[in-house]
Image (cartoon, rainbow, N blue to C red):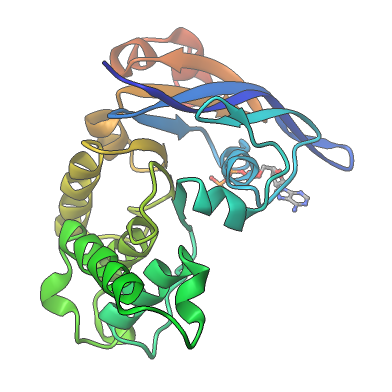
Amino acid sequence: MSELMMSARQLSKRFGGLLAVNDVSLDLWRNRIHAVIGPNGAGKSTLTALLSGDLEPTSGEVVLESRNVTGWSPNRLARHGLGRSFQKTNIFPVFTVWENARLAAQSRDPHTWHWFTGATSLKAVNERATRALELAGLLHRRDVQADAISHGEQRQLEIAMALATNPKVLLLDEPLAGMGVTEAEKMVSLLTRLKKDHALLLIEHDMDAVFALADQLTVMVNGKVIASGSAAEIRNHADVRAAYLGEEQ
Ligand SMILES: Nc1ncnc2c1ncn2[C@@H]1O[C@H](COP(=O)(O)OP(=O)(O)OP(=O)(O)O)[C@@H](O)[C@H]1O
């Protein structure tokens, strides 16, 4: 049985005269990928920022494991199981793959920065970093400097960094952006693996990947949800075909 992990409840975000997110509700379930699609400017990234705590909603609520977490900071949300990867690369280029993963693992556990850190907690940090790299398929690249790995591997590293914080929910903003076919295939299989233990929100423009991966889709246009349902339901939805896939009704 799938478990409800996170919800957006009637979320809205206004930037001056623009309602970038307009009364959006959606649920993220463990073992499911929920994709949010829509044309440029639809409000997808703004919605992610509302869920991750980077932006405060104008109205509505964010719920994480039955708890109202609206207005919580990104760090506090991360400590309670929210992981995210960003549209723009967020890695430290001069550090090795391993050092990047380890820093991310450490950020989850602020005590490990202190001089009196015990061997046990350092061991836990190292184990988290190793597990994350293994899951992301990057353990064999651990000693390579992050700016020397391919673009696709950098996106895998970003996901590894999110995984190193031991998240239950993952918000992924365009993980396939700028990838070639082979890299995209690798990422699709990584996301499929992640589904086993996480609830995933996927913002993605690559429709082949979205329809291959998503258990549920929400379609946004101009800040509003115009349709929500399974891949088959969305594919055949007249409003979606007209407004997003560019077909005449
Ligand atoms: N900080 C901000 N201040 C003012 N307007 C903003 C801000 N952030 C986003 N917007 C506007 O809100 C709308 C939604 O933007 P958003 O980036 O969420 O869309 P998107 O669906 O993620 O687009 P894309 O697919 O191009 O990334 C756009 O009109 C954008 O210009």
